[in-house]
Image (tube, rainbow, N blue to C red; front, side, top):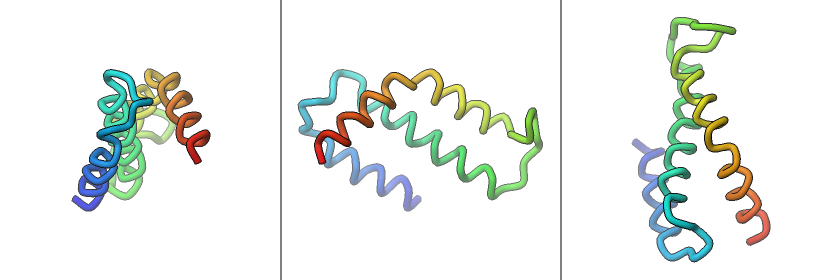
Length: 82
């Protein structure tokens, strides 16, 4: 619940950023949500699917691979802004 409140605060602060193109907020939500799920899955007991990772771990990894260009672009924007 705390994580979702932090996401709401983050997305409220991103409302008026001109650098974000159409769909960037959704992509950011997907990446951040699956990053959270990837980390939280290590805390709960899970059934290992392959390489000691659960199905949620693998789903998150596939999301990161799918959005890798976006992750690189948004990371550069954040680093250049500071």
